[in-house]
Structures are given as C-alpha cells and as structure tokens.
Image (tube, rainbow, N blue to C red; front, side, top):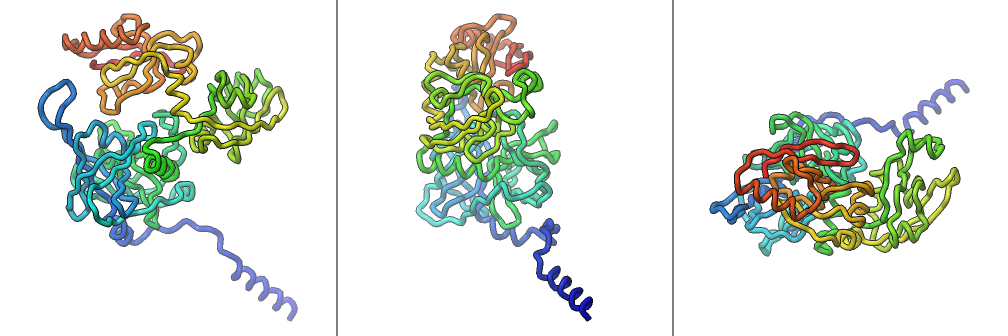
Length: 437
C-alpha cells in the first residue's frame, strides 16, 4: 500500500511539474497572424526629381516599412529613402499618403518617417529580439520587386551575425525569402511582434537564396526611440582603440583565455583616459555585460546613455581591477576628432590621416593615404568602400591628399575613363578594388 501511495505521489508530482520548454510546432497556417499585422505594413515609393550629375528625369525606388504609432510614424531603412525628394507611403488597402523624413541613422541603416495625414493608423509593436531562438518561426512582409504586400515565412537561421558592414553588426539571419524591395520591412515572431527590420541579403543573383539579414528589434527600437525624441542618435563614447585578444596577445600578456577586448590606445582627455584605462588593459565586463569579443563592448557602449557612469572590470598585469567610466557622446566626440578638412567626392567624404582621424577609426599610427570617413548609400562606390577605409592609390597614382584624390576622380569622370583600380587598406587587409568614378 505504501509503495502504491508513493508511486501515486511521484506521478502527481510529475503531472504538476511544469513541462520542459518545447519549440512551438509549425503552424497550420500563418493567415491569422498576417491578417492581424498586414494593415500596419506599408510600401514606400520614393522619387528624386534632380538626378546626380544634373540630368533630367525622375528616379523611382521602392521599399517597405511598418507603422509603429497610430499617429503615422513609419520605420524603414535609410537606404530606401536616402536622397529622396518625395516619399509616398502606400497602405495595404492601396491608400496613398505623402510622408516626410523625420530622422535617419546611417550607421544602422534605419530611418523614421511621418505620414502627413491627421488620421489614426494601424500599427505594430516591437518585441524582445533576444527572446526568439535559432529555429523559431518568423514571417517577413514587404514589397519585393514592387509587387506589393507579399508574405514569406521561414526560421531564424542564426543570431548575432557580423557581416562586416559596420560597427553595430548584430544581425538576425533568416531563410524567409527576402528580395529587393523587402528592405525596411518587418520580421515578425509568431505573436505578431516586430523582432527585426529586414535590411540586406547575401546573393549572387540579386534574388533570395535563403540568406537574409535583419537589424534586431531591440537595436532598432533603441535607435528609433532616439530618432523620434532627439532627431538624431545619442550614443555613448568611451574613447579607446580596441583589438581582439589574438593568440599572440594572449601569449604576450600571459592571459588564461581569449575573452575580452584589448585596449590598444586610450585617447587623450577621453572618458577612457579619465577612468584610468591604458594600453594592454583587457576589458572583461562593461556594466552588467560580459565582454567576450571587441564588438560586445562596441555595442554595449553605444547602447549606454550619454553621461551614465558604468562600472568596468579590467584585467591588468594578471590582476582584476574594477574601474568606473562616465560616457561622453560619440557623435560630439567624433565631430571634434574629425576636425581635419573634409572633401566630398563621388558620394565619399575624404579626409587626411591625421592623428585624430586615425584614433577615431582605429587606424595604425603609421598609416598613410586618404581616409574615407563617410559613404553616401546612394553612391556608386558604396558597395566598394566604407568608413575607415584608407585609399592608398588611385589608378596607380599615390593618394596622399584628399583634394588631389577628389580632383583625380572628377577628371576621370569627365573623360569617361571607365573602370579604375584603387588600392585600399581595410584593417590588416590590402586589396585592389575596381571602381567606376
């Protein structure tokens, strides 16, 4: 009898215990979800009446976006609306509204629009993009190839992807079909929350091959909130040049592991210098975040409010050392750092490799050449060059002066020279790139 009672008690305990978390099965249909969120997904049409070079005509581009507030605030990609003279937002029912750009952030390729109409609009909300797991179902809605609202479904293929496109790479990878025109559209979880902004694909054909990337919803929400409130981003600034803990660094500093971010240099009068950081310090923790690699620290600093004091844990000469740092504003600090004269050329901003510019982009002290400090997404050179690249040669001519490089590119355009080779230094890489000036 006692054995029977004990068995029944164990069975009851098992029934009462929470079941282990299981992945949500494939739905029979996505129709209910799509019906609920589709009214808030928009197509975006932009036009540019004055084309680059002064030629007449009207360039038209198409993209996607989604409404996040009933007042008609729309989130999309910056490259969808860059250089647009007119923006038109088209709802799922075909209703068209003019819209204006409120603010944009090129570094995360996000933009916020305002529909110019005194109405209440359907809208969706951001979800926690850290919550979904690899293998979870997602739905992408957008405007591929200008066809209008289209739906595709897939799974999260990977998280925290770094595709070497900028400082804040932290993409969600999905195999849901994303094509040209899907840019700026939402990636939904199964609860209809936006967990990503579809931004880029890897493809050799220009069409979807099942490798698409979305800006995580948490990052997008933070940027969008700042753009709405301030009209610009306000990111934290530490003021260090960082490197990964390489095998050589691990041996040189006698480190037990390769976790952390190594301080190569703390900029004079920066928050880092004032906090006491110095070369060869290994930052292991920033606030409550463990730092496994350099980009962990870059993102954590960018996500921290300007003026906030944050505890650091640093490994210095074998000892763990607690420090505190009060962050400055990155945009202000970089503007001061990049005080060298800037020259515009073919959608690029070019500057000399001054000490300040080298420090801002983490370039070696002995680097020579002309530094690319910004790239217009609409420039024909945007696929070849990125901020922080150093142009060493243009058409076999040595590049030392930004003005001379700009003049050379202008001359090559005037004579319709065709493709030209440039020598570029990007980090530790040297490579030739063929461009059409």
